[in-house]
Image (tube, rainbow, N blue to C red; front, side):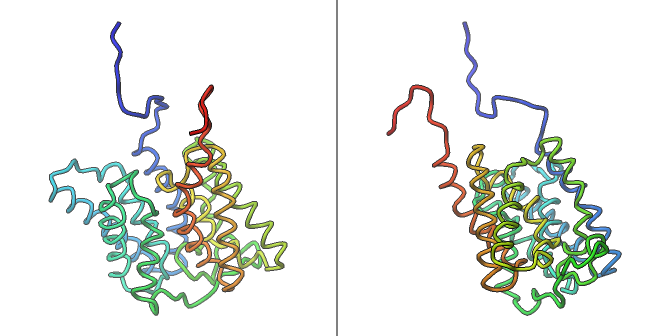
Length: 285
């Protein structure tokens, strides 16, 4: 009897990287349209610049090193869009372009490409832009969900992602199709709400578009989050805890979301290692 030995994954569910990435990209399009409606041409230019920068550097790297060109899987396009959503709408177009070049060229490919990086490329890029061009990365307004209309169109949006929190409602489709794992966003949301309530901070300053982008799209990146079920629950709690700690002591829950998630990325391997189920009949090492 012949045995076939092949690398993982061993269980195929008909879900490909291409389907996952383009699904996430499409779900973010209503948010992009809302931001273009609210901010006009600057938002459109920055979104296009982010995507072009990501595609340009990925194609350049893969052509230079004679690798298989993977632009069609949508990962570079999706990451470029995320990076552009995380900048203020008034920044010059070259900023998200350079950010996307850094995120894809350094954070993604220098660490081995898709599935190998330790930190989410969009989060690391945001920190890079924040440290390099601090004055440009300061938004001119602070979003606050004071009414239902703010949920639909937030006129006080600081970053492009803050334009319309409800425009990300398509994420429910991704969760229903299991393209996004529910444990991390659920525990992230619950932990944040409970802690903010206990600390007495207004939730209206917490539930912004940037926060929801972090909960549903940044925290759930498979490369930078645990793969075990219990690990995902713990990771979601850690994301919420780190976000609230930073947000409470600085008064800025948007930056708290991005910095908190980056720190959560750093401890994700430890969480995964401590939550791996012990094999049946196995003993402690």
